[in-house]
Amino acid sequence: MGADLEAVVRELADKEAIRELTFRYVHHVWRQDADALADLFAEDGEMDTGLEAPIRGREALRQSLRRLSEGSDLQPFVHNHIIEVDGDTATGICYLDLRSVRDGKSMMGAGHYNDRYVRIDGEWKFQSRSLTLRHFVPLDQGWAKPQS
Image 1 (tube, helix red, strand yellow):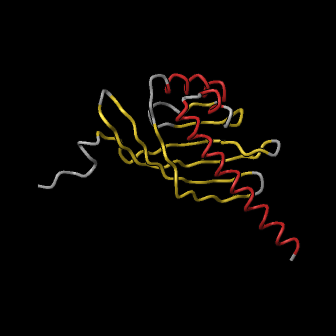
Image 2: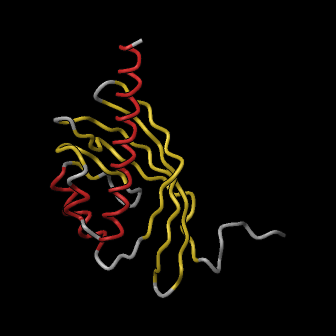
Image 3: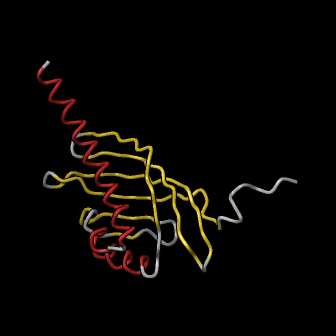
C-alpha cells in the first residue's frame, strides 16, 4: 500500500505543478511579461500560436512573445485541464476563454491549448504548446452563424 500511496501522491503533485505552470503562463500574458513567459518553456521548447510558423527555442520565444505582446491586452482564462503524466513527461489539454480589445472593439474568443510538458531539474516546463482558436470575434458580431 505504501508504494501505491507514494505513486498516487507523486502523480497528484505532478498534476498540480503542471496546472500551476499553465496558470503562471496566463498570469504572465495578462502582465505582458515575455521574459517570464519564455522561461516557462524548456530551452528547446516550441510554441505554435496558429498566427505564424511555430516558434522554436527559448530565445526565439522570448523575442516573438515580446513582439506579440506589444500593445496587446489579451486577457485569457484557462479551465477544464486534462493532464496525463508519464514519468518526467506529460501531455495535456486546457480550454481557453479569451477577451481583448482590438481597434476599439471588444473581442471574445474560445479555443484550447494542446501541451507537452517535461520535468527539468525537478521543475515542469512546456516542451510544446499549440493554440487552436475556435473563434475570436467582435463581441457585437458574436460567433453564431446568422440564421436564414
